[in-house]
Length: 385
Image 1: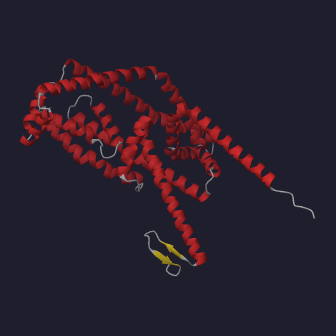
Image 2 (image 1 turned 180 degrees about the vertical axis):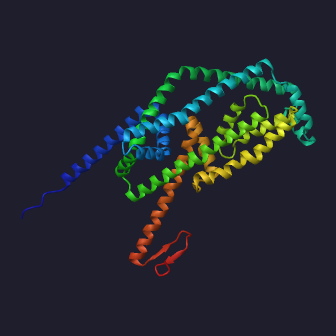
C-alpha cells in the first residue's frame, strides 16, 4: 500500500524560514534604531509638529489645488516664521537677561544677612524655634551653605556653557534634520501612518483605535499643556514687567517651563517673586504679583484647557506628574512631552484591551446564550443583556 509523503520536512522548513525572517527583521530594526538614535529628539519633535500642523497643511493643499510639495513647503515656511523665529528671538533675549542678572548680582550682591533677619523676625515663635533646632538660625551657617550652593551652581553653569558652545554645530544640524523630516511628514504623514497600521501584527480595528487615541493624546498634550504653559508664562512676564522686576522675560520663561510640570506649576516662580517683593519693601508690587498669580495665572489652566482640548485625556494628574518627572530624568526637556504620551498610550492600550474583551464576551453571549460579566463586575444573563 502506498504511503502518504510526510509533511514534517516542509513544515519544519517553512517554520525555520519564518523564524529566520523574523530574526532578520528584529536585527535590522534594532540597527536602524541605533543609527538614528543621535537624531531621535529632532525626529520626535518633527513628528509631533507634523501631527499638530496637519490641519495647516491640508488648508495649504486646498489652496494649492492638490500640489503636495508646494503645500508642504509653504506650511513649513509658515511654521518657521510664526513659531521658530519668535522662539529663537525669545531665547536670545532670555540669555541676554540671564547674563545681565548674573552681572548685577555679582556687582550688587544681595544682603543675605538683612534679608534673613527680616524673614526670621516675621516668623511665629514656633517656627523660629524650629529653624533654630534645624541649624538654620545662625546667619553664618546660612551664608556658608549658600556659598557652597552658589559655588556648585557656578561650576554646573560653566560646564553647561562649554557644552552648549561646543554643541552649536550639532544643534543646527539637528534643526536642519528636523525641518527636513517635517517637510516629508507633513506631505506623506497620512500615507505613512496607513502603511504602518497595515504592517503591524495587530488586528486592524485595534490598530485604528490605538492610532486614534494616540493622535488625540498628542493634540491634548501639546494644546492642553504646551499652549497653556505659554499663556501662563506670558501672563507672568507681563505681571513682573508691570511690577518693575528685572529680567522679567527670563522669569516668564521659567514660569512657562514649570507650568509644564503638574502640581508644581508656574507658582514655583511667581510665588517666591511676590514674597521677595513684599519682604524687600516693594509692597504694592508684591501684592500685585501675588494677586495676579492667584487669580489670573492659576486660573488660566482651568479656563483654557477645556477650550483647547475639548475633553479630558483621561490621564490622572499623579500619573502625569510621575511620568513627566521620569521623562525629564531620562530624556531631558523632551521628556516633558514624551512622559505623558507614554502614559496616555499605556492607559489607552489597556482600555482598548478591556473594550475588546467586553466585545468578545458580548459576541459569545449572543451566539451561545451564556452568562457574561459587565463593566461593573456583575453577572448578566443573555436574556438580561
